[in-house]
Length: 344
Image (cartoon, rainbow, N blue to C red; front, side):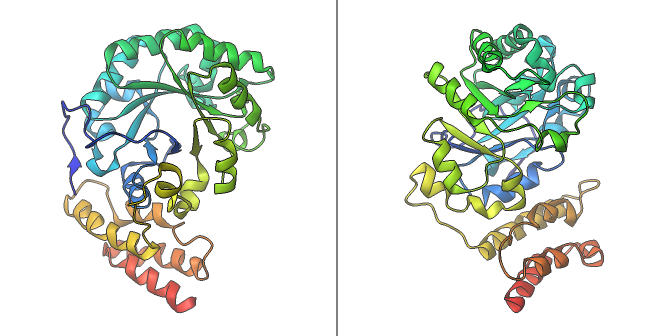
């Protein structure tokens, strides 16, 4: 198991042909770090994974290695950028390609006030030409895909025409893949959490985009939890991006490779096999002695692995035991699984 801790000049780092973005896991701040992505990759080989949003400032002026280092087995993996300066975005996209990412994604959907102060995220939807300029600058800088994740509107703008015109303007700069979080972003008065729950979902806006722009790749995001819901969306659009459900109930992805990618050779691991696969990774990471890295830095992403099973609560309790975590023994995962079997 190899960790990529130096840039690579090989922009097609994943062997063979990369799978399409039929299923993906959304970029989620403080959650979808490299350890979370390795865990998810042990459940699904083909589902696309996205980094947490990385700001251009963090790459232009900060510690590039800390922000861009990832594990080889994460492919296909996309780097999501936050920014609004075309030059800085081009520089950051170029760095992302050098480090081996498979896609660069521009965040035009985050509604948090912190992001707004940086003049990026969902507020960029009010400036589609600027977004187009940013996309063009990145596309000119890299050979990998440049995509955009956005909302369907901002504040009280409820018209489909708004998102249609936004997509049309950005597409003129060469973007052909749009990830549509099918809610408005309320820029004032709602927290990021409330912005994921309060504005109503309007999936038909994404469907209409696909009908109006049939040659574009349209991926839908927002409130999607079950295979039945995924199946219904895929009747209308090209791909589905899961958010919180993939984090809190990650085993929902266990059959994705066979069901949505037609990989008849894909092995559906049991939950215990996923745990066993993670133990060597955890031991290797802890052995590196990275400053601030503790057992909980990795196992916290695995708390939802047993969701829906009898004993899931006991599994989480063992993995949350501060004294056991402080010991730094990866076998804690096996102890947690054993507690589940005893309870079941």
